[in-house]
Length: 254
Ligand SMILES: NC(=O)c1ccc[n+]([C@@H]2O[C@H](COP(=O)([O-])OP(=O)(O)OC[C@H]3O[C@@H](n4cnc5c(N)ncnc54)[C@H](O)[C@@H]3O)[C@@H](O)[C@H]2O)c1
Figure 1 (cartoon, rainbow, N blue to C red):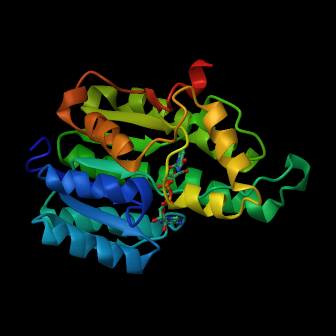
Figure 2: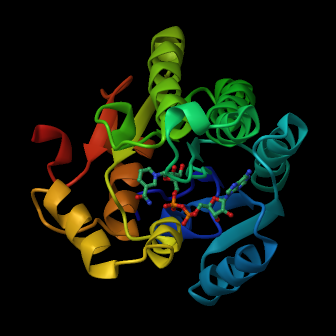
């Protein structure tokens, strides 16, 4: 039980890597509060975790709305008495679009969820972590903060911003026992990737393009991400702050 007695908030936890992280955290003894816009999958996650003997609360939450993120953190403190860690994970992709064709509306939408949503998560978790005497923040950035994936200017900008935000918060709160780190996943086989695959006209070419980009010749799994998040969220990483942990099958090393 690597998270025994801990209280965790996870945004975007109804599906994908947020969901696998919520399930792992609960298995490892944490009480987990999940916020997401997908209430149907949120309910199915609660049923799955509770059936396995875990402790979990789901709350509808759109991370681009500050009051809803504040309410999510408040639920953790009100229900379980404290907050030890937050995984700011909710995010959306940008359909591949030439930069000069990206509308203001599309740019604003991606930034609102990925960058502003992460900011709201950090902003509202910090006072709760200070009341707790310390804790951890893990932000979900992307390999796109370090390497060009192409055709996704709003997404890459948002994830670069998340990386910079992580460093600012890490330094600002380092002496107050709060550590702030990011993960930088490469392509991970989640519903986000599956939706983009479903739009491909030539599936073989689509899959080959991804394999060719990754030295390990495969996508990562949600479980491979969750273990890294657990490391950064827990005392196992007690001298680690301000980093971006690449989990990318070697992509950035090429
Ligand atoms: N899948 C990848 O290849 C990949 C790679 C690098 C980074 N990431 C990042 O990892 C994170 C999780 O991605 P995933 O692949 O698991 O995606 P996913 O689409 O499978 O799951 C994302 C979850 O976030 C929720 N969500 C979306 N908008 C939200 C909002 N406004 N408020 C609250 N919840 C919201 C969705 O409902 C969903 O449950 C994202 O930040 C994504 O950008 C993904």
